[in-house]
Length: 107
Image 1 (cartoon, helix red, strand yellow):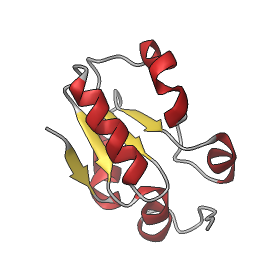
Image 2: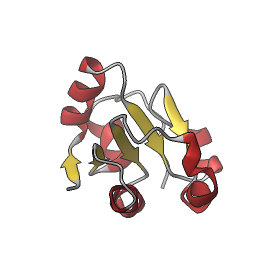
Image 3: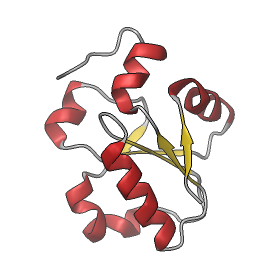
Image 4: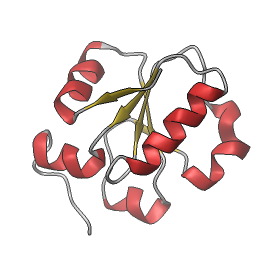
């Protein structure tokens, strides 16, 4: 089952779990503007060919700009056997507004 978490909830999870994978599924130009620290960048369009880079046994927080692409990716991960998947419901936009006010933003 897919969990949806807001930025504050995701920050708490990240702060308390050193084995978490933050999976950013945005395009490279988006990632270059801003991203969460220690995130793994695999654009959504490359996920199928790079899926072996992810460990199904770890907890994954999936991130995009507003939470829509990441929700689709998170649902896919669950459908192929990932058990611990969380979607950052408001994406990096919400993270920049609620957690890291110094983070760069884009339209």
